[in-house]
Length: 171
Image (cartoon, rainbow, N blue to C red; front, side):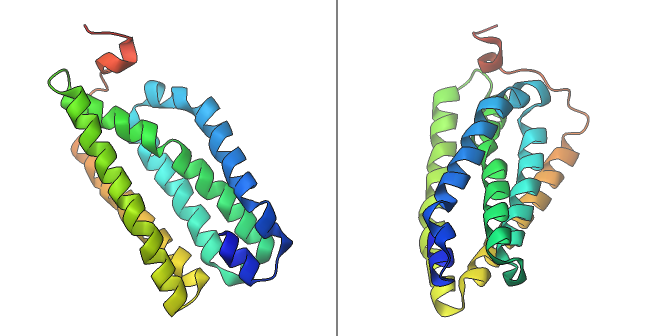
């Protein structure tokens, strides 16, 4: 995002990461209890929707610098609760069998996604332009949103049972 704004010649490139960090940290701090209250799957879906909208706004060139900064804030809000929600879903699915291993595997795939996303986005931006890189990210986020909706619909009849991590100990 910094390179995108710098490429536009905008001074916003100097503070956009601060906007991202503030939106991310405030949402993580105040929003984390929602994962316990609503369950990881619901929060996961809501945050994917917010992230997708933010990325789509960044990808629209006519939004200008204000659109890019606003989209960045929305994307930060969206991504802020994804890790806690994904951990909660992982722990709910793993149960007491192997919570450490389950979270380690989930975190490894999370890290793998981060490892691939940067170079892939850079390649798209180099080959096409920055908006195309963010459009691809929005499309991937939207695909994840559709996948999460499918996962949630298969589990509609499940009642959210807090995992042992939510109760502060083993049952």
